[in-house]
Image 1 (cartoon, rainbow, N blue to C red):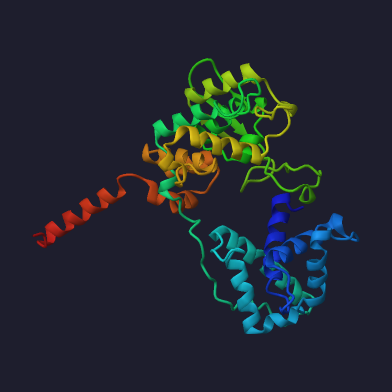
Image 2: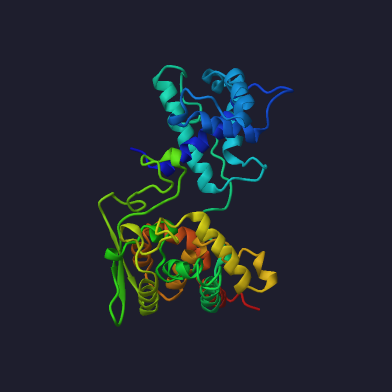
Length: 367
C-alpha cells in the first residue's frame, strides 16, 4: 500500500499533467484553481461530494474541457505535458527531484493506459528527458560552521515565552539534525526506547520509523502525520546512529525538563502530540532572525531545518569519515552522498590544483 507522501506526490504529478490536458479558451479558470480542483477531485473521500464553492467553477470546467487520453499521441500535447512537469505555477523550474517524481507518476499512468488499450504506445518513452532544477547537489551557501550552528541552537531556546517553552522544546530536535544527521521526519518519530544515553561517552539512536507530514486525506489513519519505516529501507529494519557526548547531554537535559510525549516519543508539542512541520519551520525562522546578522537572514544560510543535516554530513566528510560510513549513518547510499556532497568537501580544489601543477612541472610547461 502506498505511503501517504507517495499518494500526495502522485496527486501533485497528475495535477500538473491535468493543466496540459485541457482545451483552453477565454473563460479558462486560473491554473492555481484548476490544480486545486483536480487535487480535491481525486481524493477518494470526496467521491460523490460537491466541490467547495471556491472550486466549483474550476471543477466543472475541468470535467467539461478535459482532453481524451489519445490526444497524448500529438507531439504538441506531450510537449506541453512535459513542460508542466518541469515547471511550477509561477514559471520557475521545479526542483530536479520533483520533476523526476512527476515523470514517474505520469509514466505509470501512461503504462496503464497502454494496457487498457486507450493508447497504442507510451508516448513518454520517446520523449526527451528534460533536466531541470539543481536539487542533485547541495548548495554550499546553506552550510553553517560550528560557531553558527551553536548560535542557532541557542537562539532556538529564546523563541516564544519561557513558560510555554515553544522554542526550548525543540533545541534537542534541531540538535539531532545537526549533530547526528537525522531527517526531520526521523526526529519526529524518535522514541525514548530508541535512545541509549549513557552518563559518559557516546550514545546511540536506533531509528525505526519516520513521521512524515501529509494532509489527512492522504493517510490511512486520518491523521496529518503518516507512520512509515525508514526511507529507502525495508519496513522492519532499523538504523543505529552513534551520537557524540554533546548530543547525549542535550537529549538527557531535554528529557529531564520535558519528559516524553505521547507514545513515548522524545519530542512533542505542548499537548504531547506529534511535532508538526509548520511548528518546527516557524520556530526555525524566528531563531535565524535572532542568531544571524541582518544581512544574512535573507541569505540561503541554514534556510531550512533540513540544512542542519546537510551541515552534519559535510562536517563528517571533511573530518575524513569514509563515505560508506557516512552513508550508513544517515541512511543514504554512498553514490548519493558522493553525488550530492562532492562540492562541499574542503580541500578538493587545492588538492586537484597541486596535482595539475605537479603534472605541468613534469612536462616542463610551467612558466
